[in-house]
Length: 280
Image 1 (cartoon, rainbow, N blue to C red):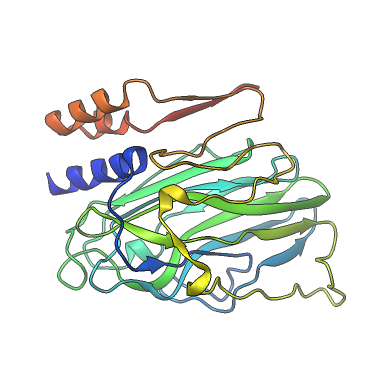
Image 2 (image 1 turned 180 degrees about the vertical axis):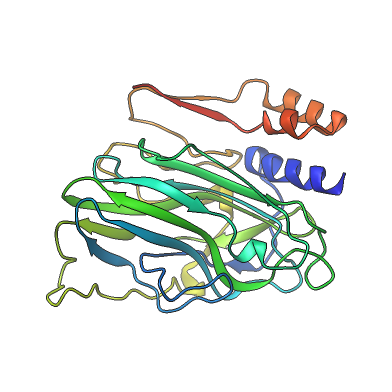
């Protein structure tokens, strides 16, 4: 039952907001995943150039100190924004940091892939023991939250942005997340100032940049596909505006969530997850 409550807490925290922990966690987009491991983060690359048709792994990393030792990590959710005219999301690995503690049982939930609409929603819940490791399966410290595979479709450049991040600790409370800086991917062109094929290196966002809670994270609304990634408190998914054919339905969320909690049904609780339909 504790795992079901944790599952519901992820959804409720996203829809209604929650009391975030005082200490904030950094999340950074790294366009070069080659040196990273589930529990290790190397130098961050915030700009990269690739060829049309090429696929690369992009890490969403939690640099040191990472997840607070007293809190642990039991679940996450994020919205990943990109220009679908230039790149698609073709894979997503959730078995990274959150799958490292003995007893971890990761259940990943995400949009179907390849994702080609400009907004990729991913979340995962650890159904292992909820205490912080080593007593339980809630991981602490730095590492890779999720590893996405991006495949280039045509020449151009796109900002890659992350919004509406929910990191849930071992007590089913949300952790505060510092504002995430976007990364830039160039397809068929070099990064600005690049001359020898090596993309310039970016550094993680300083802690002094001002922490914001996950529900208040607002990336710059400058994606070329006109999707507005701004999100407001209380939303479990980012507001979608300016993109024809995109609709969001949150009717009955509270009712379905309560039924899910009372019945103990994962499938019914999952119905609380807001749906997005993208017209062809």
